Image (tube, rainbow, N blue to C red; front, side, top):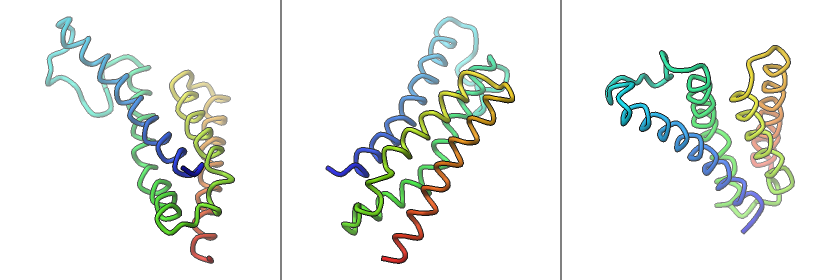
Length: 135
């Protein structure tokens, strides 16, 4: 499998991992009677700041998956992974870094680091789109 394929699976697995963590915590809150099963909002409003950041980090992944995932999928399906392979792991690392920073801090520095990680993803995505269209 190509680096692009592994990065695509990694991106999807990371989004799944964030979802599993969120649902494990939500399940605990329901089982312990702290929150009714129908008491959650999609953004985890009313829960801890960490849970709210977790919901947003997961949403960030889900929002980016159709955009960046489709570029990786096109490269894979059209046998043009030579365009995406060199930056695929950098893209995945930037995505995971963005989420981790989002989960750990809301300081001004952390927000700047988080945006920088997202900017790396946007630049890589723009490069992939242009290169795929040009090839």
